[in-house]
Length: 412
Image (cartoon, rainbow, N blue to C red; front, top):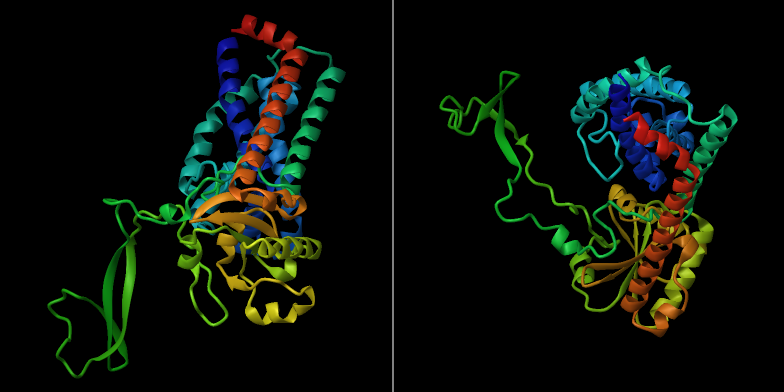
């Protein structure tokens, strides 16, 4: 039983840690998912709470996973685990049946699962959950109660701080197709041999007020019967084909011109200002981005605005005095490109070279040297700092839980 309960604990703990971590580093992604659910189920009045709930959810998952892994407050952790799994197993069953959204978002953008896959995943992990809950009183405490609660509190605060940091900056691990280094045109292509969407064409005819559908190859279709009147032709999707990672990247001008290809084939540097909704974006951020755009254009670079805001609303915001033109893009695409409203993306020949939150736009040094070199150096510095933080955190955990690691080897 000792082996069984520890194996069950070590199976479910990493799942919760991973799920909580990918949500914690991308709180806006979870916020959008909460908003989708609230809208689908008619709880629109709860949308203002989406961000808070996103942070609380990721923190709760991290806490459950880490407390199980480190054997902290096991009775409380087992109860939290059981209630969490029961609630979300029932919820995912309802979502799988009703299908209000196509992706549950349980693993953020790291792993995309269908609603039925999510439900069956929960059923599988419900088994080790039941074992942990059943054996919750048999786990031997490693520390005093006060020490364990202090550790739990530190884990909770760390989880929330991680989410807040990534919300105020950008996710330091980007699982989306618009990550730095991606080539947009390449990601928009369908590889040779991949299946495409399959449709069934149906013709609707009407006679004596009664409508009837006929297939194209139907032998009884009234093609030459003048007593039947054609109503419409339906193209019904019967099987989805391969969908490229990027499929809705377009920029359309006020006059209706598509300039997407012009930007993606441009051999120069283009800064794309990404604003999903101008009226909902940070005014301070818009001013900061506009100031940067003025400097970028003065140094010979091009700047384009991308937004889902209708042009008549853009015209009403002339007080902001944009130094660049805005083009329309799909709202979901804009939210996928960058987790900032507004945000800035650097592109050259379709390659994404840099992305910045409006709170940490690049300084003027980017114009004193090659923008590509500046962006690469900045990414390297950021990754080095994050790697140092990760190593420091691991060393700290090893020092704090040395006693646990020694006793862990005895348990198994």
